[in-house]
Length: 249
Ligand code: IPE
Ligand code: IPE
Ligand code: MG
Image (cartoon, rainbow, N blue to C red; front, side, top):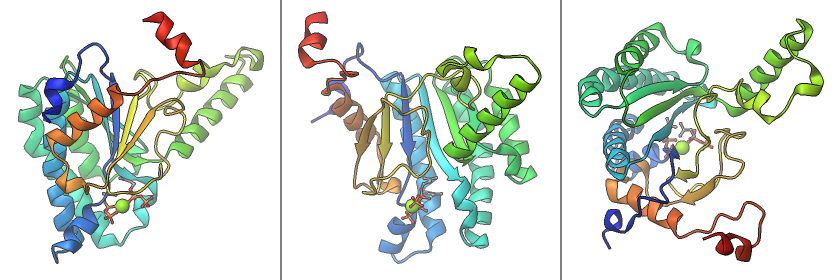
């Protein structure tokens, strides 16, 4: 089945988030080093960004490096950082031509200067683009993000800027890295792992989850279209009954 043809424009997820997992296992299966998997993972990223644009998705968040990933062997961390720099450099023109706006979320200041420099360049250069918004989660930890929001709220209370009784869900959302980005409707994780690994914990409270055994370097345009198609077959009830949802249509 050709999934793109069967996707309806009316019911598209505005925001898709992806936990890109399985690079290491993909390389191992081929008798190669883990970094070979990461290099091929970049190719899958290109495919996915293109596919998201073709499908009319507005926001795509890619989990590229978690705070916990700093604990990997130094040689792998260094290789990932180098890869990130080259991907950003090599793709800037392409992303400009495709009208993609790049953003980053996470503890960006923890990244090496060479990474932040290149990252800031692409963010600045693409900031007025009006097509897909591509959000890279780098040195990202959802618990850290929420903890920082709590700290900020606490200091705003101390300084008298806000009152405890006025705190609501928006007070928290507005202080997350994702403050001007809608919550994802669809979260995809590749490689057959069924966990969230500290990703967007606040933002995914009602997100549809989609798991696939495909290892990230094998993820192709059709895989994204398939996930969107699968999403469109679901009934999102938000606590209501199926009858209530159907009565509205
Ligand atoms: C995902 O692939 C990429 C990053 C976490 C940077 P992995 O490197 O986690 O691959 P596996 O899970 O070991 O196969
Ligand atoms: C999650 O993948 C982080 C990224 C995809 C960047 P991991 O491979 O690091 O997750 P765990 O440690 O297996 O949960
Ligand atoms: Mg992994």
